[in-house]
Amino acid sequence: MTPSARRTAQLCALATLAATVLPAAPVQAAAPPPALRFAACPDSVPAPPAPERVECARLSVPLDWNRPHGPRIQLAVSRVRASGAPAERRGALLVNPGGPGGSGLPYAVTKRAKLPASVRRSYDVIGFDPRGIGRSAPVDCGNMGGLFAAPGADPVPVGDAAELTYLTSLRGMADDCAAGAKDVLPYLSTGQTVRDMDAIRLALGERKTNFLGVSYGTYLGAAYAARFPQRTGRMVLDSVVGPWNWYDFDVVQSRALLRQRDRFFAWAADHDDRFRLGGGANEVRRAYLRMRKGLSARPVNGFGPSEFDRAVYRALGRTERWTGLADGLRAYLDDGAVGGLRPASAFDGQDSRNYEAANRLVKCADGPAPSPRRIVADIRRTRSLDPQPVLTGMEASTCTYWQDGPAHRTPLGSPDAPPVLLVASAHDPVTPIEGARQLQRLLPGSRLVTLDNDYSHGVFASRGNACVDDAAAGYLVDGRAPEADVRCEGPGLPAAS
Image: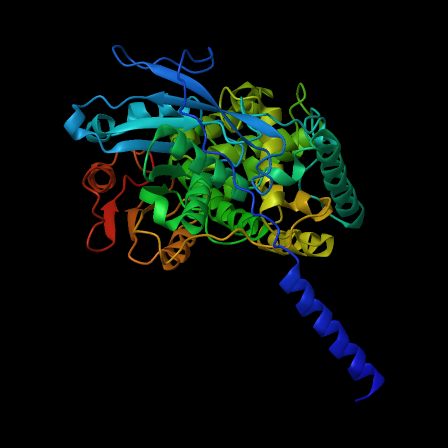
């Protein structure tokens, strides 16, 4: 035996001895959470119609579920009880409005008001602010590299110098978040949040988690099904984020927004008697570009191209906002007014600073980051499709400069989970339907309810479509997925109001 081989054999023997003699490290387990003690809610939570009432509680959970005896944070939870007789009750229905970054505490009231009566009678609706959001240990990233400056820098860089400035702003955003949220930075992932969801289930005394998630809520639900397939109950995932990493999803969305904006241009042209933007789609496009160019040269009261793109992004996602967007274009071209296009928070009534910070923190904790080279290449590729794209939704670009970003992908879906119900609008630009089709493959037996001839984000108990609402309500109440995928006829493009 050579000296090298002899040394290798000795090391292997020592390793075997150590494994035999040394005790295994104990596996830490968190103590079961106490039952939730519900009381009055903060003023930010609206009251439901009498005689129903909303109540709120706090739940203590580990900051890091991998160290259950370490530091803890408090989660804010809300509840509106089922309105039906005890025999009708199906349990608790946890709900999430999306984001990532959306506050779910008031959602138990606002979403429940839109749910079919059979669902309201059957379920206690449970809202919660995910960690880092709202009243659950909210995070703050400070100035976020100038994101909140008014007017903001043009979000579509053109040329080498502008691209370098764009990357520098992303680095500034990452640095501000690393400084402002350094103690919680690694623990705001979807993976940690699904552990919080299971703690809520346990604190409520429920055997399984029934769940309704919209937009990012679908990602959250799919991650819960991957982690806890045996504890997954009836789950409706509406407007599905596909099983991509976040940056890839953002790129897919940016291309879908181009298609949606073209539809908007053609729609506005079809209603030229109402909006006076031009009788053809190209004329409306030119009017749109005149406004954006004018705001780039001379912002109006802090409203420049960044604020304009944010307003356009928000309007393109829901066709009922198209009239307001077209009116805003006309008002600016007539007299330079921008009041009708003032950007709202992504979730109205929520602190936009907290939302924007949590959005980046969650996305960057969930999976791999793009390289600066890829970011620039994708912007150039998108601009080759349309010289003036809307890049507002490219939040995961920040992750390229994240400190110690993860290389993993958050697991989504499981063959061991029960069938879930996926819901999608056929032409949703915010969460394109191909995401739902891909996620369906990871959840065997699941069914997809498609609202055809529809162009908006958010479908179940949102679009007022009886076919969709009946299918989802039947699944939630009876527990049986449809025998096959369901197609419902949508409303088409809206009339000009």
